[in-house]
Image (cartoon, rainbow, N blue to C red; front, side):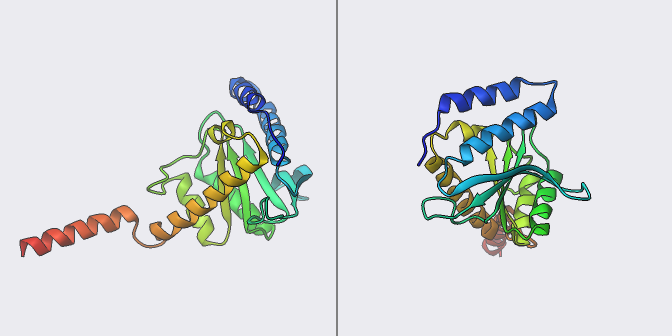
Length: 202
């Protein structure tokens, strides 16, 4: 696995976060950083960048050839689409739904969404942005979220592979426990507590 320089990654993230007057520049700088990090993974090579559809209705930030070796991202699509958002706030559900739709339109089952400041909502209750990630998986598209804090913990391509594996496993697990289209975990717990209370009082 190719080693990365954590101090460089940290410096770039700090610089991106400090840039407040040039949103386009922030996005391009984040894309460059993500391209460097992803190319440290075996089997990944950057095929193209900032691809816009003929009708200018969709854009792909980073487009990787993924040869899917066993020590790489063999559990994700080839080609692999990566979206980068260097926003100064959490990304909302609408953007996540748009990305999931882009994956579906391109015949992709998985993609990576880099949100520098995370996404809206609560991961445990699957609200806001997390709800859209969960429903996208139910419809066949897996969107794996990577945040700025995640990037600060990456020192090699192997670290990125481990992170995305963990995100995939956690997402599938939460998908099962959340029961999209049915009752949530919190609702079921409340229902069981009410049932026990009724049994005890009868």
